[in-house]
Image 1 (cartoon, one colour):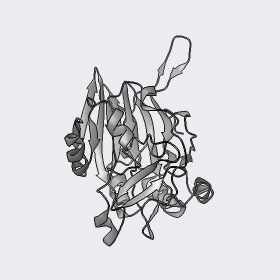
Image 2 (tube, one colour):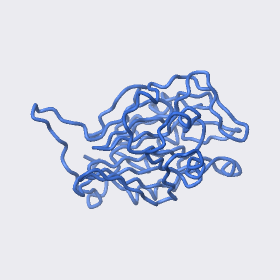
Image 3 (tube, one colour):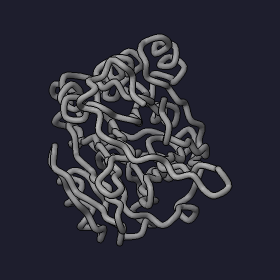
Image 4 (cartoon, helix red, strand yellow):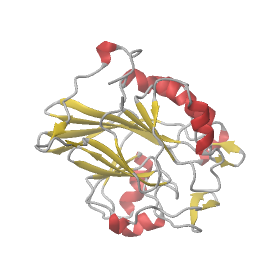
Length: 288
């Protein structure tokens, strides 16, 4: 399932996929792309929403400190279209990741798993939250299935700008059935590349899917999300079996288009790159 250059001893045992009586296989992991970094993830019995951004074309996303960016696209779904959710995973509290539409219309009952700083603000808005520091975990349970969510480090900016931006986290989601690992998925969050990714790979050496926040976002003359070159370095460090690029075409502050990343990543390693269109659903079950 994983490229041969990974450490064999570190690859966990994985339960088989389920095949129905008619011979069709039921996906155990799937992603539906809504837009920006917003996805609907299905991992076994669990359904999650990531970084909810439901503004429409022409509306402004407010980024704090007087900064804003106008949305260039429409989301593929609206909140009323969403399935019942077990949790929301939020990398950080920026207007292009949790907007005023989400604040107004998302149900309050399902937990929002996010940074402690974002959890405090969301709690004051009436949301149920689980704030995680780096390497802390929380778990969802449904019958014999478990979904563990681990917060992992992210770096949204370096230097003086880092203090002006909200703390950001990545997340590693591990779906298990009867204790057997079915799928390990890494949400990068709005991070730059760097040595923190090496530590993530040491702790999670066999990642089935990486959902990558790209775009090369520029704020105050600084790049604050991965561009094409950093995206390739991310793949080299993390070595996921497959990667789904998101967060690259929805706002004017995104300066590194997807085509640049696809060109740079061609032949860069064994990772399977899987571009996804808004509204498209990807079966993530078999990365290789």
